[in-house]
Length: 342
Image 1: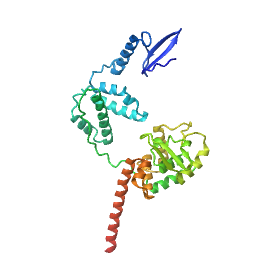
Image 2: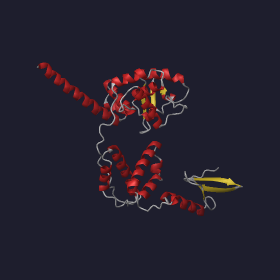
Image 3: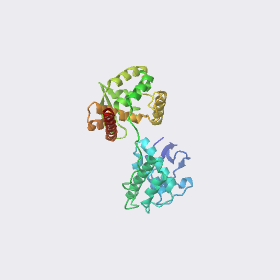
């Protein structure tokens, strides 16, 4: 079978003649009439493709200039296609929500108060509200690129306060986990990787043997594409030395069939490990990044140095957390001094 470099098109040869068809997931293949590559053939392809882009192929006519139209065009654009799979999935989820809310609404006449309406609608889920509004800003910037509008009413939107978010692991919680999951278990290896590299769980699950060389771990972060070199901590070295001889897979913490865990699967795997250790619900893998940053600070590293390893957003969050914790400790110390003076 010959692959034609057009979206959803494949070609094949029968009795010396080249044929092509258009096929989308969940739909039957549609023959593209005409001599493959000719102007008439290309016009037929464009007609079929446009029907799917506008929803006409599903019996759903999309009006030009609406949010349904904009969302379909954005999903078909290189801007969307070049996103990483997990980011693409998250964007698509929020785009679908926007489509349900404002699919028939005209994009060019979007009022500023539409942003406020989205905040009001999801006020009890501030993280979701902020994500949807951010997605709105992205596709309206795309609408400007399409020359549908001149100004973005969702530019620089106010963000709802999301609360404290993740918290660092406490030292007693780290000790609790280690007491339940000894060296030689995959759970302990994954835990030490998170704690002693300060990387996202999504990066930890993809680490392979070749990333560990001569006392260092070399990682390319998925989110930032930054290359990070991290010294191999003693606790992590011990955990890997005890675990790696038990399997011959490339991944440091492979899924049951030997391949890398999927993002959701790894999250569920670690959640089970935390639960078995009796740790609270808000103890999660992201908190391990903050715990790593906290430990690095206690070892004397600057916030800039910490940011180069864990990411500057993480370093800034831990800086606020540690300063608040230190202020609380000083306050209690002063209260104790007052009590002792009485």
